[in-house]
Length: 89
Image (cartoon, helix red, strand yellow):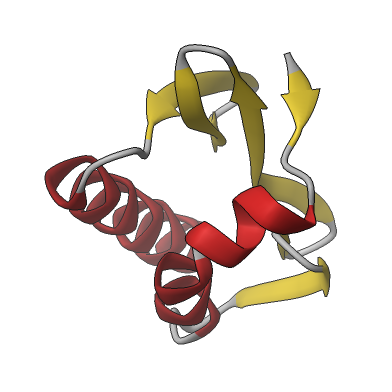
């Protein structure tokens, strides 16, 4: 599964814009977001669709992001992860 290319990221632009609005996330390159000094979320594409890898603790969780409900789920989980990390500091 390859990282999301420019065309895939173009299709995800509204999702990327929403991620940019989550306090604590920084987009170091297009579609690659960091929380603190660690990679937190990035995107992949393959014949089965678009996916996001979201850091959950010490591992990555792969989530589909092809539909509006799937994108909302990613945003909710990303926002929750940022809030939890903020409390742990």
